[in-house]
Length: 298
Image (cartoon, rainbow, N blue to C red):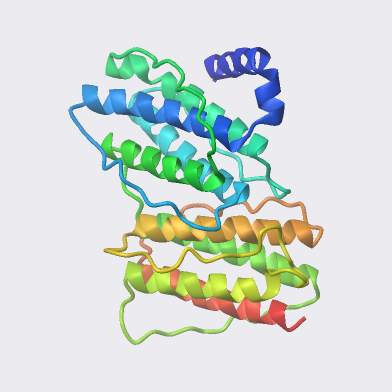
């Protein structure tokens, strides 16, 4: 931890203007440096990652920060696997997230990843060149590449237990928002006639986004900058990691709704629970839709 603090302190002292006035170009530069570093680890490890990704629409800095937190969690797991010190990541702030906020998180990821170089017997890579014309969506896409590179290095795959934790965080945040606005929601008892798949959960996740867009759009009571936008249906097989990524995007929007409503409490994830299935996640999200309906009726 001390090494990380020293590294970050020196970095910010050397780059004060970037720290305060970071743009998506600076954030992308940092993620690209991490990508190159992880590529060197995979090469030394005789592993490789699928580097392809698609650019999602409607991505804003808050979505990038929320997903960067997930990447940081994976970096901590890789550090643990290699005998290095770790720390718990903090919940994304409930505020109007800026590129500077994202840059701060990605810079920490860069420092934490670089410290793994000795574990793989490689050098720390030089910083990637500063690009131009990058957007939050480009940064988000590069974070997806980092996530895949970390998976290739042996970080445990995302499982329904992880997704359930995010779903519960989302549900708790919306329940807090409802109660603070005078709506006490009785959680419905939800049944399903068959076991649900990650694809089923992804579909109900998209329904949650559609529900939120009705109460957080321009001119609505819980309106947020940029609105709530759906990435649309994902093509190909859907894994728990895809559902997790979608729900993290939703959580970023809900935190923005909390901020617009005057709440400043971070949406802290509950303790990880074992034995969860896609059906459990589907049930939580279906219950969450009832909370959103209650908010819509206020």
